[in-house]
Length: 205
Image 1 (tube, rainbow, N blue to C red):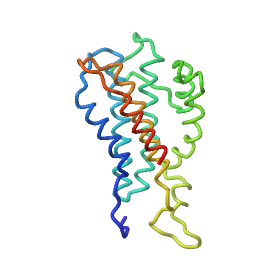
Image 2 (cartoon, rainbow, N blue to C red):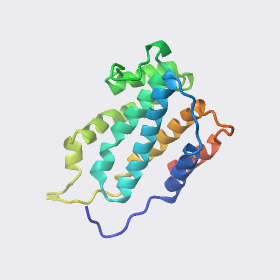
Image 3 (cartoon, one colour):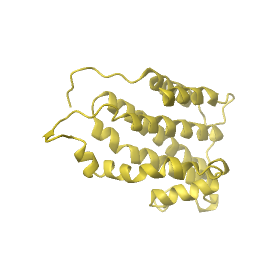
């Protein structure tokens, strides 16, 4: 999808993911039934979040938007494994089934994590995005209509179109790596304050 000007990933977002990638490359994990599912899912969520930024930079907005739901779903599934399931019920094969509905995952995870439950964090921050995420992933009318400009069709997107997706990518990746520190067994724990500060800069920009 060609556009006139080269696009750059905002510096504060680039720094955020550079810190996360730097720390992830240092992490070591002890194998357990819970870690063997949760850790890959958290990593998948972070990878999708990074891809959202890359696709935005490459002017591929439909593909960028389509990753919002998989990123959210991977994070919520990881949280469900980490907090909601008895370890004896965890299976590391195709017989393991996750709740299918994202709204159900949000409800279960929020109820299981005290810091989320106390302020209804997931239901107020993520739930409003779920309907739109489904539309973007499954090529719905919102994804189609964004290409209309009055009575014309255009490949260009409105100014600021990508901002909510980039904010989601930053938020989910920060939450995911914070959880990964719980499974990390290396000598040095990640300074999560670095990520929190970078997130603050992104959301205030």
